[in-house]
Image 1: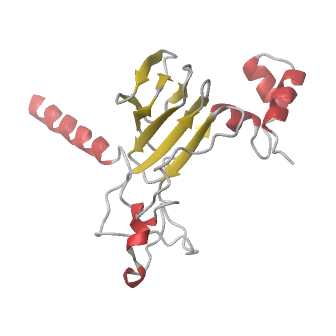
Image 2: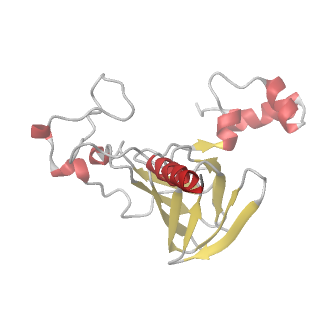
Length: 217
């Protein structure tokens, strides 16, 4: 009986490991054909004869991005939408640049674990477990921090100098849900009576927050 239980546990661990990130590829390459009308879990493959080195190249992370927004941070993704050759490979990167005081607001990646490597400066980072426990630390140049898949996390530059990180994901398109924008800028909007009850505030406060996230005309 113990041997059977051990075998079942082993199979369970192996099985959950298989689905812990994007599924394994079934061919050498499957460069995303983003013009295809075929809908599937990922992108359909470009004809092999049309594949070039450009499908596997991107230089968008080489330099800091220009931060020009209210939160003081800019995310530059290097995922399958920018690099078609990442299709089916289960990995992607991003660069996040922060001005002094800049915040990468609380958000989640529903399809990926994230590992950040600090290029410059230092950041206060953290994530919140499902038991509402905050795990946080100050990280500086050359250091690494991990945000587990699906958990709410953030990065804040409390220093006097700009800071930048490179993020790695175990998904070709990890997805991002910014908590505030998801709730207060949804289209159609989340009903006010849902938000007032969830946050224990009045309608005026909810409408004020929604106005901050309204698209600029």
